[in-house]
Length: 461
Image (cartoon, rainbow, N blue to C red; front, top):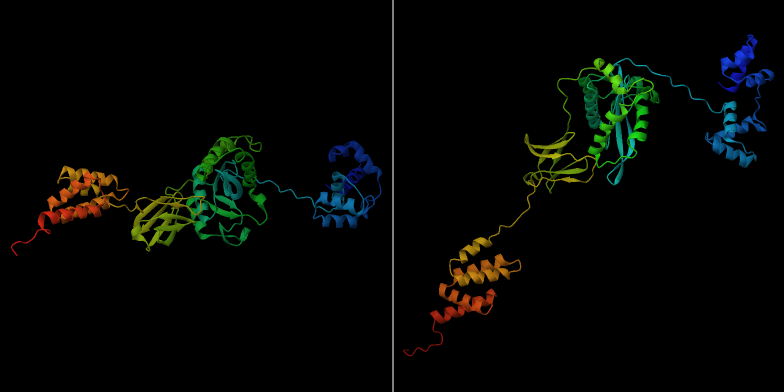
């Protein structure tokens, strides 16, 4: 109650014949306070909210400070040379009626299996050596307060379906009603009582045995069970923990839900959520015998590098499909690429990454040249030990061009007669000559000397 209401209540009880002790006990005031109010018969001051400070100026200072009492005190000190303590300022503001006290939100009571609440909240999370903003999705049973949370890089309808599916598996059932806020992830139009749930989300919820219900706009207290838990997550789960990636983050979040959040006794329950869940479990909606399929479908064209793009990442496909149209199926944990009604590639899904690649070595084999050196050596060896030794030495001096040199040597062997060729090879090996151009000149000299008498005179002419 405001001070004027307290004074009116004291005077009303006094007029009813109540003693000071009874008034003090009923209103929970000290007897001295009751005596001061009884003695002060005059009306409460209206023109001045504080000694020497007109109500109009006090209101002006409060508005110019945008409701900040500390800044209001600075204005009073600078403009009227009045230094007032913070507690006195707040009392003046209350007595002047400048700040309306917040109304009590009230308390909601839920029956067993009646309602569960779902919401998301952005949290700053450190993954490895990088800090990112991750969306924390949470679902809580309103009666037992059993909590389930998971983190996602972003929260679309695909992630919402994935989370709800994992949540009802964790709860081993679902309540008949799930209260949500007025987010576009779940709604197609409207808000509050006039909200229209997106058809795909409504159908997905019916498959799991519940329906969505959006609360009134600017009325988050309606789902206070989950709102309070986000603060608990930020102050208990995230501090002092390290995470490598989203998979590790969600694994630790699940362990925290089981070992901490749902194991600690709650004063409002008089027991832990896990114990209260034992009472609520028989009243939950049974899980469906067949789980709804969870995937998204995309049409893509394979680029010139043999990849398709999905969620700012790239996945490889066989090179023969470059330029072809393919169908991409995005599942929670993998990506499947189909072409002409057949699976041509399957990759683990890249989560929480951008501009990353997932490549299957079988899709993009590295071009390699066939090593024909052993085959060439096999054709050279049967001729003679001298030729084999010369080929071995030529290979050692090839400096990366040995196959080319051996092919040239084999070509010389096939072009010229055997004896002049081997004689030239023996002579080149003797002098350490491994220039195949000069070797060919030696071969020509041998051929000219053995088969043609170029310097002989024809005496019979």
